[in-house]
Length: 416
Image 1 (cartoon, rainbow, N blue to C red):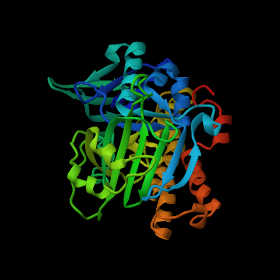
Image 2 (spheres, rainbow, N blue to C red; image 1 turned 45 degrees about the vertical axis):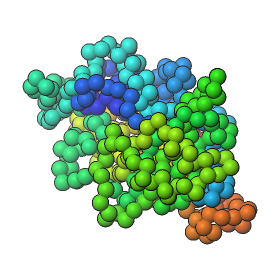
Image 3 (cartoon, one colour; image 1 turned 120 degrees about the horizontal axis):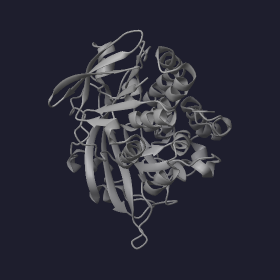
Image 4 (cartoon, rainbow, N blue to C red; image 1 turned 60 degrees about the vertical axis):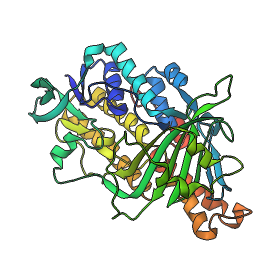
């Protein structure tokens, strides 16, 4: 009955907690020796936050995240195009959180260790191969001291965008897909802007700046940790560095393009100069698959549907994956039938989000403004109709599964 999980990222740890909730034995194998809080800021949409709450972690996420109040889109001249409330302010029964990715992962890790015991997660251990029968899976685990075999009922590949388990089924897939965009991601300690809990985006498809606070203001200084992403787009056939979560970014590579972006609501070049850390990462994804589950082995999270960081859906969808798979473990048993049902439900949804994000997702309103007026306008109504402003956002919410009424009225995924 044991569920074997390759990868102790956000999706894999969410599945471990879900299995524990269902009373299922689980073992997680993580290839890094020490799990540390890597990354910068992300957003968790209300449908993922609902699942975090239902996993009994409402107090924990409240301590490390900031409830997102609104999302606002601006032109490259700093003019407001569109804004809408988020989370509880938008009528959801659950908040949206802006949060440090690493802190979220460590929150889940600590919960797994506390509930399942420290032996549940084995670090420095990589799934290096597997075989399966109609009754179970045998995985080869490689460590610094050698290899060993472990057996379980199913094997779940939550081992990220470079998933070895995905590569087993798709050996000719090759490297992730790069469409030409490079991200410089950083954090800066500064006073929050606009509402104090705003996720702001400025620019257009070829040049964009995204920023939001990921901590509450310090009571004495009034400053928060501000997450930001500076994005530039190049020709897809241009050469660039391979993705690396730890590569330091260089100001000379991107700051000159943003020097004039000092707005009355935010001085972007100063935000960049004051950064605590800057990392460089090409924006990549993988092509949608026509199958995730192969008998007793399946994929989860980025291993299944690595997507562009548009629309705040990467971590969110990984958490939803874990909960839906848990639902089918409960109804179908821990075996091939559950994995097949999970595949049928989740794969079409996530594939659609991958493709929507390639089409710029809800950020497309900024590109439309750029095309029509170069980003300079007095009244947005002279550039875009009200219908155009709302259509893109509402369509994306439907694709991504977080329309307000639909989510609020939906039964719980696990035990609903």
